[in-house]
Amino acid sequence: MEWKASSTLKFLGNYAVQKSRDEALNHDAGNAPHHQVYLRANWEFMPNWQLTPQAKWIIDRSRVANDNRPAVADYTWVDMTLRRQHIAKHWEVAFSVRNLFDVDAQAPGMAVIPNDLPLRVGVFLRKSGLTFKAC
Image (tube, rainbow, N blue to C red; front, side, top):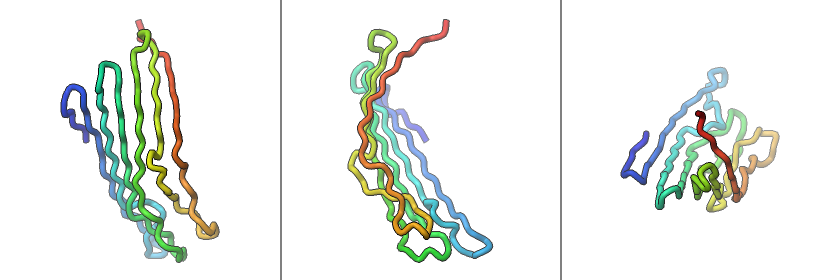
């Protein structure tokens, strides 16, 4: 879903639901989130400057059959990007922080692994690029 609130502010989002079943074991297939929510805003607060926060909620992940560990915890992951476009006509630069609040998020691991797999910790990125328009 996308909503343009104004000429400088746009919101995007989606919701996904998944219910998978292992029919051989008559059990939830496990590991996949039953619900995911994604929201993003694009705000051009000055000409050629954009601030883009985004959030992803991962909700309700069951374990596979015969994995008796507690369910994997839900988490909310927030990223933020500041972008400057049209520098000297063709350049842009972006600074991003992934996992802004340093959430301790885990991906389900196999039962033989004692702990789940940690997702990345907070990361700061810089990206620059050169763009050309085809003639």
